[in-house]
Amino acid sequence: MINDVIRRAEVSEYVRAMQQDYSAARILNPDAATKVETERRLLSKQLEDIFETISPFLPGETKYEIHIADNIDVGSTIGVDDGGQVILLSRHYIAFLRNLIEMLFSGVTVGPDGVGAVKFAMTQEEREVYGKTLGEYLEVGVPLTFPKSKSDHIGPAVFVAAIEFIVGHELVHRIEAHGDQSDLSLTGFQDFCRLRGREYDCDRRALGLVLLQRKNTDCPELAFAGGIAGLLALSWLEQFTPGFVPGGEARMYHPGSDSRVLRLHTEEQLFWRAAGLEGVPSDFSGAILRRAFLFMGALEREPKLIASPLNHLVRRCISSGQPNHALFASLSGELFARGKVRHVARSLGALWGAAEMMAAEEHADATITDIVGGPAMELFHALCARLHAGSHGARAVAAEMMDAKALRQEDA
Image (cartoon, rainbow, N blue to C red):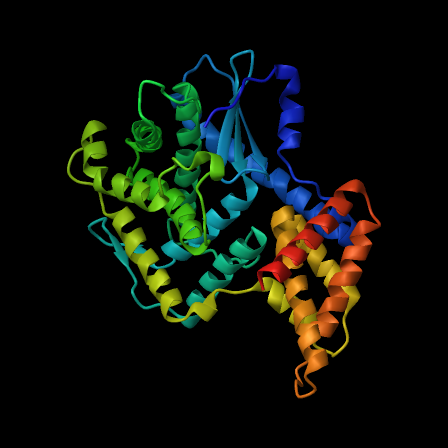
């Protein structure tokens, strides 16, 4: 969705404002913060290279630039007063998307007839890695476990197509000058329907852009696979996040990603014909969906596969019976560097609140032998005190933890 136009001189400051404050990471684990900065630069270069593949198919009179950002869900664009366009993509979502594609395509093969086929047998390791990846993203906002990348499958090519689709969707919003204004000639429900329809239309046009760019290649169907994968990643987050609202409270008119996936999949033949391609497209996207359903079914049968990295972290740091403050600070600092800072702070605060309640139960009941709450509570107290003694940004993180702790105890 588009925002107000900014001046060319404000672009750098705007991009900087869309990044999170790494003060907590620098205090707790400066090496992790430095490493993430290096990874950010490498990712930025990769995204610029990907964007070069679709830029020839965009309006040539416009200057485009692409940046990674922390403080967005997936992607966004903003116009510049000289006619340029700034595109932002979420660093965290890109990492989750790459993982998802690696996992999906490790079980999808291309048969001799060019049709995608699913490997239905799924190893325990595959199920565990999937559960870890999803649990990590839900709890800290970024995956920390990465599946093994295989050079003999088309996952990397699908990842490129998915990025092209996401960028294309955001650019269509900008080209069509979509805003958040209501159409006063319509009733509330009618306008809601109009706004939702725009999202579907942007999906269609973005997929058409990616297919146009790939129509003369050996595998034009990668356009469909990229679009489906890009939306499927968001669909999984919606399904596993209680109360998830796509785009936040102000954008409830965003349709659920499940329905967006379904529309693109059922319209593939129409896209194929519109692009002037002969025959029928190979069912790559259908293979992706079948593989995704296998993963979903594995979690539904064994929900404990969804990992809780913070619970594991706390247990690890009190395994000796005494709190290991140095290890807890270092590992928490890495989470603040890699994950979404506010997300991590609130998750840690909620665990802190639970630890205090557990400590009270342990103190009141002498029969409890697995003492967890007391040592864990000490870890959180010390961590919060260290952050509170730091910079303004670190103190804000400490305050966020305190608020989440109080909320957790109120909800108990």
